[in-house]
Length: 184
Image (cartoon, helix red, strand yellow):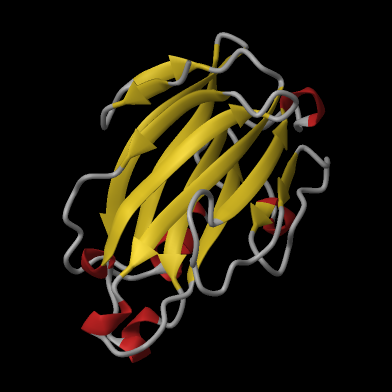
């Protein structure tokens, strides 16, 4: 049975192979334009900086160099129930210098389309066992992000050689560029 987390809550991740599912619903009636939300992953070292450009995983770079993190592809509409985008993780393959994996969702072309996360609802991140599809944990974002165009849904981090998940739910108004600046 999945553990439902609150913002800031942390939980151990005991499975070496799992999938991160991200989902959301959008209100295109608010802008008259369709939404394209994108999941991105930053694999960071102890210094909270990205290990290399290849450790920024997104729709144009689907796999980390070590093969530990793999984005399954871009969902351009977010239509339908369940996960809109997924990232597969195999911690047995992860670079030894990796200390953190940040999961960020951004709105593509948000400024031009006049969109923000205030027009997105039912956002969640879940982690499930890749073999059994059983949910390990889930975090539903309940904040009202009225100006933010990028949100860090959660992060995996290594502490005492064990991996944990933290429900983050922190937004930024400068889109993906804010996170690229933060982690480069």
